[in-house]
Length: 119
Image 1 (cartoon, rainbow, N blue to C red):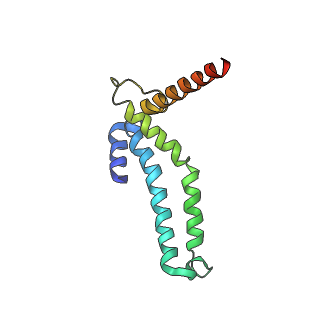
Image 2: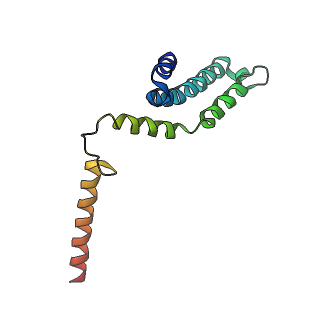
Image 3: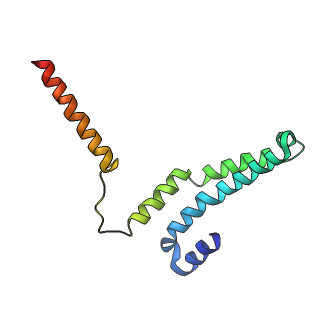
């Protein structure tokens, strides 16, 4: 994944590789944190002691996840870039079709209840 992002960056430039760059910014720190967590698990109680550097590695890994922007920001950018590939698809209202139908039903029910209460 990193090599593909680097290749795309070299061939298409930063704008052409934006999705892959954002994906790497999400995946690489998460993998680092998972590896550090597994190292702590494998070493048991010693993994959290000062005999091994795993707790320091884990805290650095967690900081790296935040340093270049939270994962949610990068995931949102990836989603927007992917949706731009499909210009003919009309955008769904916030919450999607099912959520909006549910809201409409609730508002109709509550307006009926208000009308009944006023009688």
